[in-house]
Amino acid sequence: MKALKIIISGGGTGGHLFPAIAIAQAVKATEKNVEILFVGAKGKIEEKKVPEAGYNIELLEITGFARKLTFKNITFFFKLIKSLRKSKQIIKQFKPDIAIGVGGYASGPLVYKASKMGIPSLLQEQNSYPGITNKLLAKRASKICVAYDNLDRFFPAEKIIKTGNPVRENLLISPPSKSEAAIFFGLDAQKPIILSVGGSGGARKINESIIKDIKKITDADVQLIWQTGGNYINECEKVAQDHHSPNIKATAFISRMDMAFAAADVVISRAGAGTISELCLLKKACIMVPSPNVAEDHQTKNALALTETGAALLVNDKDAENQLIETAISLVLNNEKCKQLQESIAKHGVKNSAKKIAEQVLNLVK
Image (cartoon, rainbow, N blue to C red; front, top):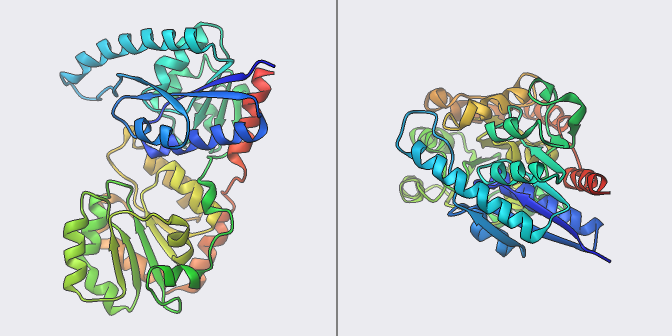
C-alpha cells in the first residue's frame, strides 16, 4: 500500500515549529503508513530541532521582509525566487499528497508552489491576528485551522475550522503536583511562587523589571523562578546572588517546563500564541507582557483576546518597569483573584488540537 506523503513547511521560531512537530506526531499516531518531510528556513530553529525529533528536513534560503527601507529587502526578492524554484523541485521529488503551512518564512514559497501544482494545502494559524504569509496564502488553501474566534475578518469563513493550537504533550500528561515541583526547584510549596518566562533568548523588559524591583519580591517573602534567557543570564544571576535569597532561582533555560508550570501560582509571560495555549490548558493565573518587537503587534492582540474577557492581566512592555512586579506580587498574594483568573482562562483552552488538525489533514487527502 502506497505511503501517505505529507510536507510540513514553516518555522523560524519555536511558536511555529513546536505545533508543526505536534501535528506530525498526531498524524503518525492516526495513520501508520505515512512519510513526512519538513521544509524550513536555513539557519533557523528547525534546522536543528526537526532532525532531533526524528524527521527529515529540506532547507530554503529565505528570510523575512523588513517593514522599513533596507538593503536586505533587495536580497529578499532574490532569495524568494530561489526558494520558489527549490520548493518546486522538492515537491516534484517528494510528490506529497498534501502540504501543511504553519506560518513563518519557509511556508510561503512551499505552500504557494504546492497549490499551483494542484496539491491540497492546509494552513495552521496560531495567532489572533494572522501573519502576512498566511494572509497571502489563504485564498489558495483548502482549509485553515485557527485558535481564535473572529478570524473570518482575514480568511474565507467557509475554510476556517477552530482547532486550537497544538501544545507540548509532556505538559499535559501526568503533570507533577505543586509540592513535587517546588522541591524540584528547591522552593517551599507553602509560600507563593511566581514563574517568569521570556523565551529562549529572554525578554529584556521583563528582566529589567525584576532587576529593578527584586527587593520588593524578597521583602514580600514571595518566591521566583526566573527564566532569564541565554542573553541575560550573567547579569540576572549576579543580581540574584547579590540578594543572597533562597527565594530567587535564576536560570537561563528551564528544561522541565512541566515542573515550572506546576510550581507556579502566577506566571509572567510574553504573549506568544503557543505559550497562551499552554497557559489556558494548564489553567494558570497569568500576567501578559506582549513583545512590541513582533510583526503586526500580534502579541498584544493575542493578549487582548484573554484580558478583555477577564482571563489574564495585561502590563504593556513600556509600563513594565513601573508596574510589573507590584502587579505580580499583589496578584500572587490574592488567592481569590488568582482563582478567578484560573477559572476564566480555562474557558479559552482547546484540547486535542494536534489530533483535530491531523483529522482535517487526513480528510483532505481522502
